Length: 90
Image (spheres, rainbow, N blue to C red):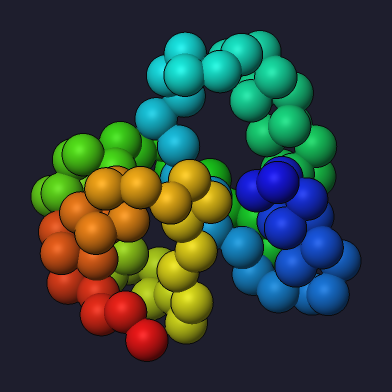
């Protein structure tokens, strides 16, 4: 689902920042294959960051200054993301 969202936003001309720690939660090769496809768009920027790494995640968010943050895997990570990166939910 996240891959589809990113693809649609890229087709609309949006700048899309993707983050993933590339762990083996699901097939790492599938993740890498999709990254290759997404990285063909100059508006796609990927950073290998773990959501649990608040310092690096916060730095990435501060540097990229996103207008919208979407967590495609809603869970306790979404709350941690907001808290560790200094974001607020709207």
